[in-house]
Amino acid sequence: MSVVLLLIVFFLGPTFVIEAWSVDVVGAGPLRSISSRDIRSVISPDSRLLNDPRSLEQFLDDLDSSPPDWATVYGHGHHDPGHDDRLFNLNRERDAQREGKPALQHRVTFVWSGELSRYDAQAGGFHVSLGPRFISTRWGVVRFKCEEVPSNLVAIPASSLQKTLRRKLDKKQKIEIDVAVTGRLIPTESLVYDFSHDHEGLGLIMPVVRVEQIDFLLLR
Image (cartoon, rainbow, N blue to C red; front, top):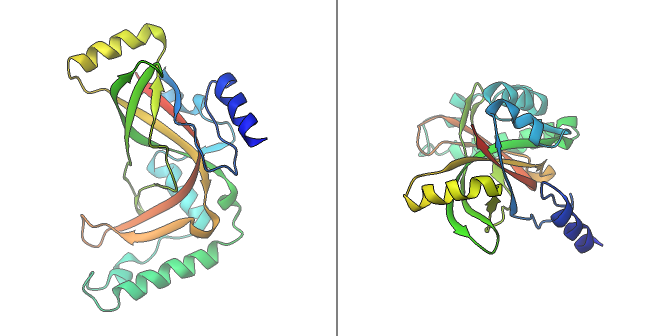
């Protein structure tokens, strides 16, 4: 049954979606050329768009009410004997307090950075390299973490755009895109609190998402 449904979605749907209980995400999809203000129009209407500090802060407020006391948890840093225990206890306490919160059930969409690479004639599109974005909020820096992302991402542009993009790549020009990732938090590992390895004492929050849908966006 699930294989049949996946094939139907692949051939008929404008966006390639997986079933909520599946772990296999279809990595090929159309490259949509849109205005930055129109991102909301191309993602699932039931999804919560989390791509700026304000939306992320509201989401974290709904999940965990208030930011951690990062200074206390950090103490004297990574070499502080109690640092790891305090961080472990923070995550354990927050996990317990978060149980049953309605926001855990919300479908969410976040945006990562993508770049087009070689053209794949068989697929009719361009392979995509993907990287996370870090967004500063009053909670700390938020960086989404995916349970699993397809290794073979391919963005398929309209035929009218394909030649232009291929010419740019032939000239070694960088073509950046946005990649909208939609899914749900994993209940047993919904948020992970940690510290940045690049900036001393800076709190890092990682929502852990099981991916259900990927949309490739060329913003204009």
